[in-house]
Length: 479
Image 1 (tube, helix red, strand yellow):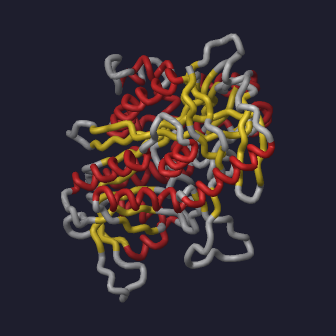
Image 2 (tube, helix red, strand yellow):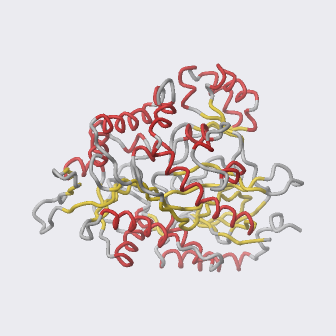
Image 3 (tube, rainbow, N blue to C red):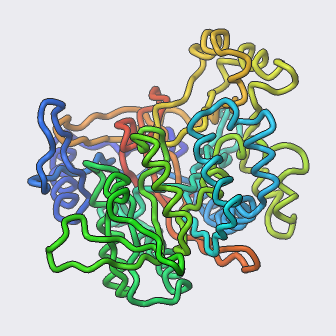
């Protein structure tokens, strides 16, 4: 019998209760944590007063060994691909403009316009840093088909849950070893060293009232403990008051509260854990602050160009014949990357035929906009009425993607703080982290940097952990 149809192992209620106690106490004592939600009637306290364990799976997800190894191998090619896409100005301008996605998507347009203004002003971007995550699902259309690996999306900004995923693997005490925190910190440290000022700080641009703060703090602690690199955290609103650019284009951050024996600090790397969604820019002033940060000579993680490279529209364009080969040779893994893709097309393709096909094949599709963070997609039966009311001029902002069909009837025990334990059929998404440091005239320096598993009930469409759909998990390698 396949491990997928017989998973998870049969356990008694007493055994499950004991496992739940062991897992949740491990999580609470090993920083596998979230801040609790704040009531809409109450403002968050000025400093955290309590924490809850992150949503977790009691038992790791089975993933074929050969496909797990294949995903790790693919990451090196993906690192190089998106570095080269971000450096190809004419390609990104063509995809974003000339009737492209920036004409119909206000958020993408704002980012692209900010990037164009910097180019018009002659402001060079010496260093781009990408901390990436490529997400996959197992694909098995029928029980008689072999299981393959298909990419869901590629993330170029705020690729979260690396440090927490490492702690889930520790909780399961399961091979393969996951050193994601070390791997992501190495990428940030490499960009810091390239800046060539050991006394500079790394800036974390964060959301106000961030509940996923422990995932970020663990990366901050790793930077200091392993590389002696210090971190300063600021929201866009705070940076609007404290950030400035020196005559040498150094990014200088002043104290939030003057007079507390803190001096302004110079920034080597700007790492965005915010800025990936319109809600992160509360006003035009926040977009101006993003442009100010980008105008410095600090490495941007990601730069505006790299963030635009990570849009769904670019993902779709790269699947077109010959487009991938513009950036990657067969020897560098182009064929292997194509093998990890399902079909994607734009709703504005072929004078409306793309939208018509999306309606006709709706039960096999998901529609995706140019958004990150979960909760933005349109699935199956919701597609026809959505497309019918979508103005034709806005179709370029959406892509249609064939649904990946994971093996069915895989069970798991999911545990959420305050909601107890449930036993449901699930699907698991494997994410592989990597980093790339690059710039004009520089060789792309890149590495694979660990992995992540997120598991959700198989009847739930969205999968984001922060958005409340999935839980953190790890890997059980099977043959």
